Length: 181
Image 1 (cartoon, one colour):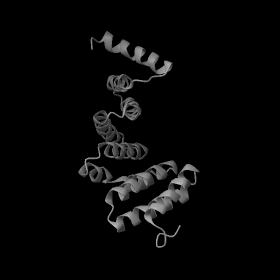
Image 2 (image 1 turned 180 degrees about the vertical axis):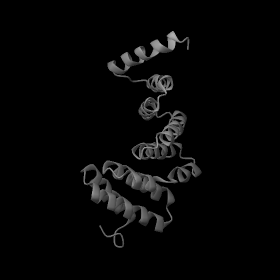
Image 3 (image 1 turned 120 degrees about the horizontal axis):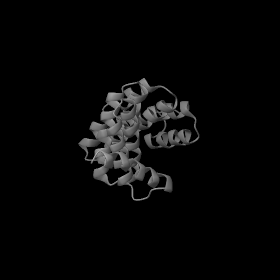
Image 4 (image 1 turned 45 degrees about the horizontal axis):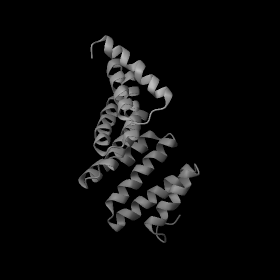
């Protein structure tokens, strides 16, 4: 890929194709070049989106510190434009990168912020996955009751649950009932 002769949009499409094919190095290069091209064009939203995509690729390639650097500050760009869904996705990527770097406290806070924004947007499936990830972090941090509550909240927010998830939701209600909550 040659960023000087190809449009930012072309670079984005090539990077996405490489990502979908599991070609992490090509996807990484493509998203980075697309980010720079969109930045040169003054399209900060698309530039931030490419940085989020780059974060995901770097996490796939087991390079969490670089992923953290790629996603840094993108949530502010989306928030400044009132784009709650992409702000939430940025916080989710931040949480994943922090978790991979071993910063469980930071990951917990970022997942919490993502879940709050996803509730506003009505993205129930994304919110369920985010609260499940938050629950996993809380368990790792020894916060068992909070983990149960987070998982329960995620399951309660989803209108479509598989049989296994409906069963899990019933099981998770037991300790809360025993505690009178």
